[in-house]
View (spheres, protein in one colour):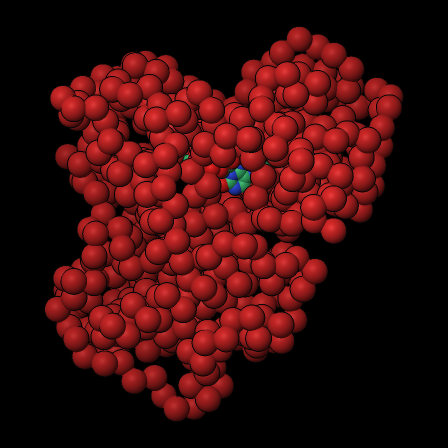
Length: 492
Ligand SMILES: Cc1cc2nc3c(=O)[nH]c(=O)nc-3n(C[C@H](O)[C@H](O)[C@H](O)COP(=O)(O)OP(=O)(O)OC[C@H]3O[C@@H](n4cnc5c(N)ncnc54)[C@H](O)[C@@H]3O)c2cc1C
C-alpha cells in the first residue's frame, strides 16, 4: 500500500535529474518556514540522495495582484526571520526582493539552469498555481511540487468535494493515517551535505540578495512600486508571532471556542489565518497542539469515524471538536475544491441550483445599490456592515461571523451577482492579510451557495441562504466591536 504522504507529491514534468547540477533547488513560495514542511523535507531527501547541497530560494515580487505595504511588510518580516534562521543554521538561503516591476524576470530560470532538480510548494490558487503550471515545461530538470498545506493530502480526493459533509467523510477516513505520518519538525537537521553554494557574481549583481533591504523594512517598502494606500497591519508576520498566538489561544480561548467564537466582542478565535496563509505555521502543528490539550484519558483510540457528522469524531472536549472542524474540514475543503477546479474563482463554478435560482432573481429590484468605492470606504446605511468593512480596511482582518454577513449584504446591495462577486474578491484580497487563499474563495463563494444547500426562496437571494444585520445584532455580542469600529470615530 502507498504511504499516505505519496499523495502529497506532484510530478510536474518528466525530466531527468541533471547529474551535473550544482544543487537541489527548493523554491519556497508558500510554506515560508523551515519547520513542519513536507516540501522542504522532500528537498532535503533529494539533496542527500544525489549528494548535492540544498539551495533554498525565497522571493518577493512587486507586481503581483494587490501588492501593498500591508502584504509586503508582513511577508518581509517573515523573510527576515528566515534569513536569521538560515544564518544560524548555516543554510544556503537566498532571498530576493524585486525593486521594480520586471527586475526579477529570468531570476528563477537562472537558478534552475544550475539545479539538478527543483522542488516547490503545491498550492491550488492565485499566482502560485499559475507559476507551478507554467514553470515545469520551461526547466530542463524535474520540477516537483509537494503539498504541505493541510492534514489530508490533496492527492487523496479524486474530484471536487461539493459539501463540507462529503469532505468530512474523506477526512474521517484518512485522518489517523495522515496525522501519524507527520512532517519532520526540523527537516534541515537531516541535511547530510553541508557544502556552501556560491552564486555567480554576475547573477548577484543583477539580482542582489534581499539581506540589507530586510534590515529596514519600513524604508524598503516605502520605496517600492506597490499600493501604499493599504497600510501595514499592526501584526508581525513572523513564525514566532504565530506560535505566540497559538499559545495564547490554547491557554485562554480554546476552552470557550464553541460557545464564543461567533461573538466579535469575545475575541475567542485563534486569529491564526494570516500566518497559515503565508505558511509561517503548519496546520499539523496547530492540530497537534490542540489535541495535546484534550482531557486526561483521551488518546487517538478515542477517535471514531462518524459518517461525516461534525461531532462525535474526535470526541473529548467539544471545543476542540468544534475548532478542529474549522481548521481541518472547513479549511481543507476549499483547498481540495480548488485543486480539482481551475475555475474555482469563476461564477460558473457554482452549483446548478445556484445558477438556476440566481438567473431567476437576476432582475429583482434592489433597494440599495453601492459602488465599489462606497463599500470600500464603509459608506453604506448599515452600521454593522460599515464596522466590519472598517475593521478589514484598517486592520487587515475581519471577524468570521461578520465576514459572512458582509458577503451576503454585498450580494443584496449590488446590481447583479457577478458584480457582487467581483467586489468581494477585490475587497477581500486587497485588504485581508489572509486573502488570496483557497479559503478566500471558499468564504466568498460560500456566500453564493458553494458548500451550502438551498434555503427558502426570497427576493434577490432566491434560494441562497439569507442573513440580516438585525438578527446578527440579536445573535452575537457586538457592543465593544461597534464602539471600536462603528462610525470610524476611533480611526480617523
Ligand atoms: C466572505 C468570506 C471571506 C473569507 N475570506 C477568507 C480569507 O481570505 N482567508 C481565510 O483564511 N479565510 C477566509 N474566510 C474564512 C474565515 O472567515 C476565516 O478563516 C477565519 O475568520 C479566520 O479567523 P481565525 O484564524 O481566528 O479562525 P479560527 O476560528 O481560529 O479557525 C482556525 C482556522 O480554521 C480555518 N477556518 C476557520 N473558519 C473557517 C471557515 N469558515 N472557512 C474556512 N476555513 C476556516 C482558518 O484557517 C482559521 O485560521 C472567509 C469567510 C467568508 C464568509
